[in-house]
Structures are given as structure tokens and as C-alpha cells.
Image (cartoon, rainbow, N blue to C red; front, top):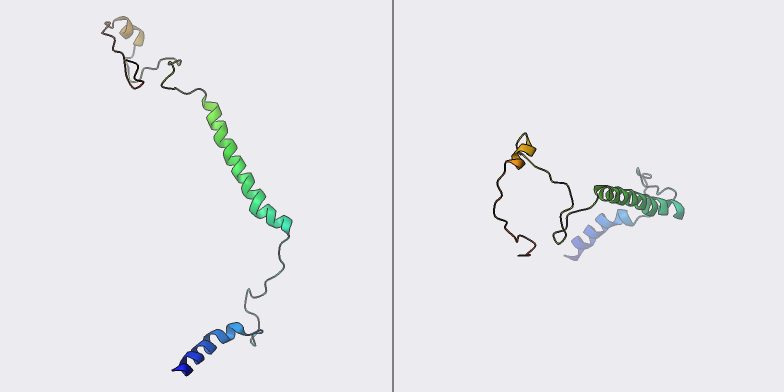
Length: 110
């Protein structure tokens, strides 16, 4: 029972433990020259950092270009926009009847 286990280990792990392959090197077996510290830093630190900086700059520019945003606790300062309204809004506003004023809403100022 011990002999099959020893033979299995030797037959499977033996070639991996050999110093030289008698057939010759396989493709990709030569490790080649290593890369320098400067090239390593360039590949793994500077290039990803530059990509991150460009994406962050583009995101910041799009946010800065948008301008002021509406805040619920502040008053509305933008010009009014009428979506899907009548073709002549001035006449529609002039002919509108004044209704009761309702206070409150999402801001909670009743």
C-alpha cells in the first residue's frame, strides 16, 4: 500500500523537481530579463494614476459646467419652464384664474 503511494508521488512530482529537462527547454521556459524598478513604477503606478486623474478631471469638469443646483431649503432662482404647455403661454397665463394658494410640500414649511 505504501509502494503505490510512493510511485505516484515520484512519477507525478519527479519531473517537476528535475533541474534540467533532457528534451530541452519548453516554449516560455526561459524567464528572460526582468524589468527595472522605474519601468515597474511606470507600468503599475504612473499609468494607472494618470488614467485615474483624467477620469476624475472629466467628472469634475462635467459637474462644474452644470452650475448651481436646486436645494430644497433654498428658494427657486431659475427661470420657469413650461413642459407640454399650450402653444401660446402668454395668453394662457393671462387667461388663467387665480386659485387658492396651498402651502407646504416636501420642505415641510407649512
